[in-house]
Length: 189
Image 1 (cartoon, one colour):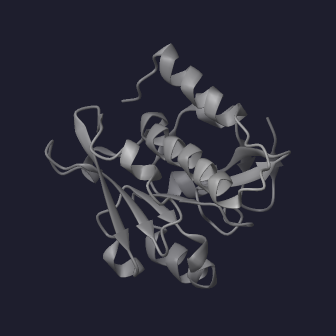
Image 2: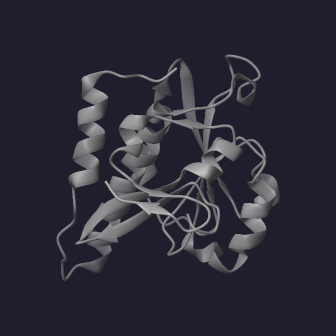
């Protein structure tokens, strides 16, 4: 069940509207970018509903996995161990897609771009929220893609891929996102 409190909605809207200022300190800019994205990843759990069998019992954590080189640095430390609907958020890092079978949210690092078709094929029938920040990710079958528009982080969501994975995405999140449909249709907020 989704948590529909106004505070969560305000946080997501804030994150969606928050852009980062270009800085001569590229490292700080990247850190801020991935800190914002880490906040998004945590909040996705509040706006996505997994089928009941995605969690065999109440002790199973919500698992966020990073596949490939970790671009987040220390940014995920702020969300690791937090709870969501009674489940602890566990963070795992993997270098091979075959090791990601127990992931609920899978962030596919840009370092894995050349392997993207293989990765998406392997997870397409699993109850996994795939997330990336690669051009064309949602069009290729990924579920949520971070994109930069006018120096702001925005979301593209492939609703057909989400349905195939058995995931229900809140209309509150969809209304703020660019919707990608298989077959090339794009719907902008």
